[in-house]
Length: 326
Image (cartoon, rainbow, N blue to C red; front, side):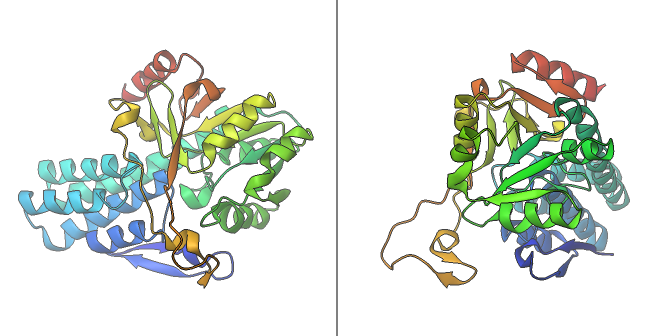
């Protein structure tokens, strides 16, 4: 048994599939961004560990080591260690078959959560709205509907006329390569802009709402998402544009504070090269954090599968998390 995943690095010019058959191939697919997006890497990590355990049943101590290795592939998104931990716990309780069932349960949870994020979030969208989104938080980052794109998809299904502005999202162009690809493929009216055009577009009244995804959200409403999200939030507030975050509750971190979160620093080549071609002079230094933190005062609301959380977030998110745990 293998999990077949779409290699997102090849998009939009090529459709290329890759097999994940165990812990190491899952770790590699996540670390090299064959797959990315907080909910999706949780699913892939869960299946990678479960497939490994079902193939060779290594015993408790080896299983814990495998789980740690998969979980450490990318440090910022909380979905990955949480999903892997669930699979490990299932294995320790009931063996390899139970681990596989848990991975399948995580997949189904993310699928249904994405749909319900859309159901709740579409209420925030009016007929004729233009929604700006950053990075990719669609089907390619999750399962089926996506997070940030789920309200847009559901609103369109309900007959609302929604247009999308996708910024390119440097340095690896996930907005240009992935968001634009999947929206155009689905026939959704989409305009691509450079990252430096966000303020211009808002100043011209071209944006009604912003919806972004998240890799980790803290109980007080601090949002960790793709680098550049913070500046979009500042511009949205300056121009009185609502800024929404869409996420499944599996992305919520109930115990950490902002200083606890490790911001992943990625390969300088992502900045120095575009599609294999060097664009910067040799000898220049590079900063390449994968994520930034948006403070809660810039977030208008957080859309989850259980409903919409509004400030103060510690109260509203605690209530929604309690509903989910019940």
